[in-house]
Length: 390
Image (cartoon, rainbow, N blue to C red):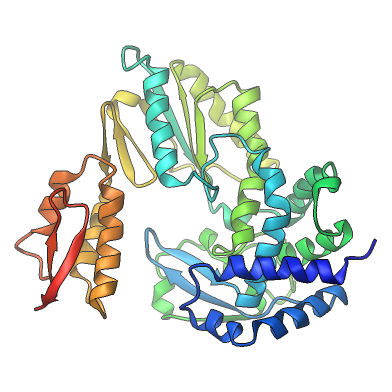
């Protein structure tokens, strides 16, 4: 039956409230909020008569924690992303394996690190046996996601759970198709300097995806924009089959993944070596490749990098990239005391979870640093407060 207008409007309001969380100080949210009820009613009507189309995105380069190309959707389009997420995420959430950590409630980087540390102890019988870790990465993951494959993957699952979906199924298929196959390159405002893109590999930019943004095709067959809520969910869905393949067909009990960065643990080095080709073959079937320069296989006693830390037996330290980012944040010219405190305390709060007291002390009180804010720190160096401007 056709989508009920009153019910859809209710779901749009729920999606709007989700979207504006932590965004209420942004210009786009403030502008929308002035007359949000009228905006949502108009959006509802455009959805029902199927005249809705995504608006212009803003593209820029983010340099933390690494250089990435971000496509920020229009605030109204983010409401649509939340509408989709709220409707289908509960279904996929219970199907995902436990050790998929990205963009999931009560998971994330800290949980992924905790699990990787637990795996090293379990596989080595508390470091009494020789064990190995295989670390793999997918080359240009988001830019190489095949949209046709993704769309089929989503509805191969949702077709089995129609009775659990709150929205009209035909309407849901239509709106998900709009979001997946929309190519933001064709309607974008680019912010920042051209030099910001220097050093960014082509396989990490939507502007260079196959057919993306070219005259030959108005739509790209591959590539999802980094920065959208739906892209985060769709990215997990796309690799869900690989997760099951590694755990249940290849038989790796100790396995975890954060986006396209994944770890396998075993006492059998040969089994890990043989798994590389098998995983590569699986990924080729969905249009992806293992990054040939990011294959690491080594004894766990030597330690390994994962999600911004270096995991060693009995301790976890901060990796060089995080150290460097924290160092530069301390030297940055912040516009206000509040911005300085918020930035530095976010680093300290994260670093406080790991073996980093000496590092925090060294960086916070490095005499060579020229810090524009005069600050004090608490006893365990997990938080700073500003005294006064120098």
